[in-house]
Image (cartoon, rainbow, N blue to C red; front, side, top):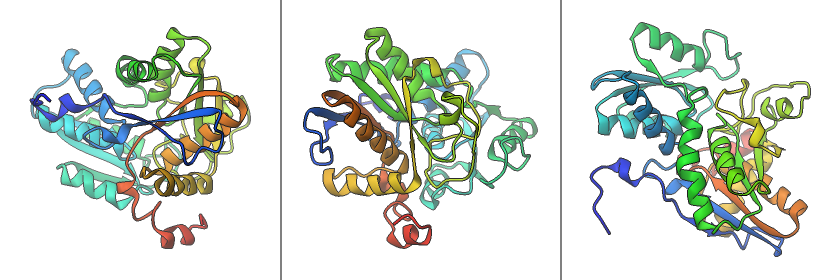
Length: 320
């Protein structure tokens, strides 16, 4: 095994494992792509380095510069890792619903963290999107903006998609992932569709998000929800609906309970977004009846111990 020159060289090439205990449909092979094996613990490590390197190529960064990003946590970690190696400083804006573990983790990496209210409109000056834009102007800092940055889906087109294709030897019928910025599902979906147009691309969206209703051209009923890391009250430019075949709406209770069940049945610890993706994958398996589904597990549950894995917290919020 070779020695990596820095942590960035260890991003990607994450493992895939068959889920046999949680999947009741024996005629469907359910495979989990475990993105928490990335050094920062999530799929977002891939876009942290991708967005930084795209900015470097464009001449937008020099050592010592500030980077600002609105994030629910995981992209912040990915950016921190890349920024430390490359010599940049990071300030992150976050909605106040994120776990304390995520906030503490980002501060441990040396990031400046600004907490903003969740229950405000995206264009409200208090929102974590708006605050990031304001910081970019005042500091000044480079706003990478994962929601609009095409280096986001491109990273998954170049890395995650090819890895899935290689690991399954091209033998898969569907790919399932949660939808947040849309980068993962758009990049992977584009790659897989180019290899085999018959592969179905299925998204998971929290109840309360507008992604599902936008996709199906339904009235929007946006409200707050507890699932972290996926779902939006905007339509990100990084999201390409054209590669998506179906979106499945998932409730908070379904997502949180599924994450806990995954830990107990498969020894895989993930957060609520991973639980939501698995809920969608199992629902789609009922429809598929026979074949192979790959579900992307985006992050580790170790940063949600005070929420997903706390019966006290779940009971308090009516999720048990």
